[in-house]
Length: 173
Ligand code: NI
Image 1: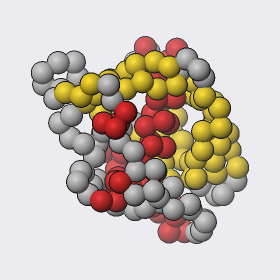
Image 2: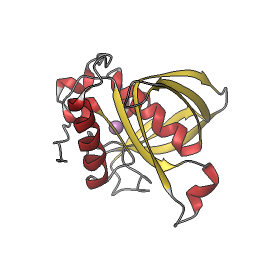
Image 3: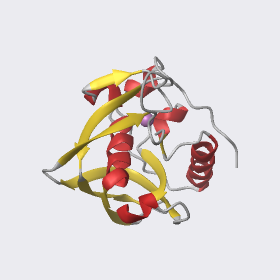
Image 4: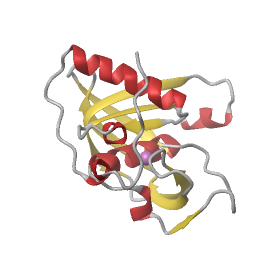
């Protein structure tokens, strides 16, 4: 495995709509493992392929599977690898939360996201998968899927600031 370089604004790939993944070969497996390693090293709780300069519809997330585990320090986290992810259901209820992004260092913002969502996509071997997410996990999925469409949290934020001024974000994505 190898670390990949995380690109930051104004890198144009971050603003591009990424292409669907169609080849599930060995290179893809290496890329996925590299992305997980890069996310952990950053450290972050999510990473989208455009953030390492690749315009492909691929995200990795590592977070608590159950919302109630967010408060427990020793609760296990789970890794999700989703190719060509799509939000197929979203709650009417939305929640405000403070987000940061590994591709926009030094800035955080308050963003409204659906409280719970359902995502469909393909796993690393090309098999269909569905995920139900709520709380922060739902927020991370929405943030990462936005990356695949060239959308950054600053586009959706109701308020953006430099974190040293105020509250730190809980996680970088
Ligand atoms: Ni991000």
